[in-house]
Image (tube, rainbow, N blue to C red; front, top):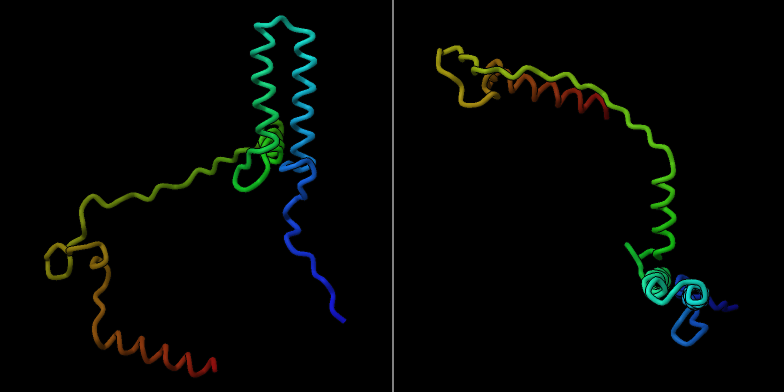
Length: 140
């Protein structure tokens, strides 16, 4: 028996022409708010308020930040600014830096800090390789 699997489930249906239901409601709410402001405020203040309301309604309807709707961005921003934050400072100890490089055994200054430690001879290197090989065989 074959079943039809829904595809494109993350895409909202277009209900009002090219607009989804949410977009239409944001724009209709913005239009209603502009109408109410026109009835209350004088013309000069109405123009400023209408521009702000229209911009907010258009942003809510069409703007996406990081592929998420602007409403979610606003809710996260509001939650961040309203919630309490705890900053913890941990003092880290500063390691003293050597002002002069240590002299090597031959009395010649080393080229880098890596050469300051004990010399790695070929015999010592072979012993280390042999002990690693033995441990590897024991673990198997």
